[in-house]
Image 1 (cartoon, one colour):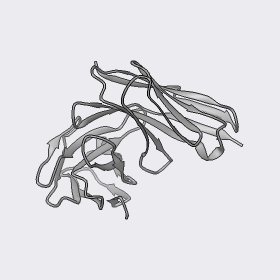
Image 2: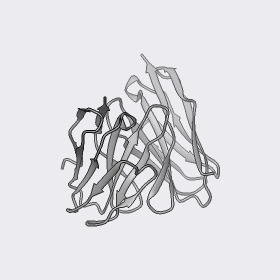
Image 3: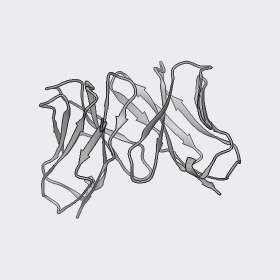
Length: 109
Length: 111
């Protein structure tokens, strides 16, 4: 069964404490993996797309990596403004995407 | 450039009432989508459209209808609202089967 699982469900970090979020998937013929950030009461905001194993992308304190079975979102020296829910999504076919349930990140000052 | 906008932001309905949610995008995107987001569940696709005048069912289409009469607009209708349709609804658009851009959401409560 096609599935996307994110862990942990919630994460609390002190400011400056680096960590990683995980997105594992069981989808045949991966056609990309998307990371989004969602702030409370708002829609998801696009962060990264990864297409092949070994690919990495960076944006400020965030770095996304991809293997054949999972993706990691590494957060280096996070700040309170990085607090949000991070979602990953995998396309199934041309139009349908499976979204994970997200990791709620809280960064404490 | 407003991106993707949704109207209304909040709505409370009684069981059996009907309503229409409006999504508009100004990015000239071909593809548009309607999702619902419920606690503990990922975003689930309700309906989608790959161009003006076309619509198709997603993962959870029952109880909803859609129309795409203009390229920039995608309407989601609830004919007879049920408490199970209490949710946050998100519209998204994209150039093709790639990065989706989301609206701010509509929070719907059905009593």
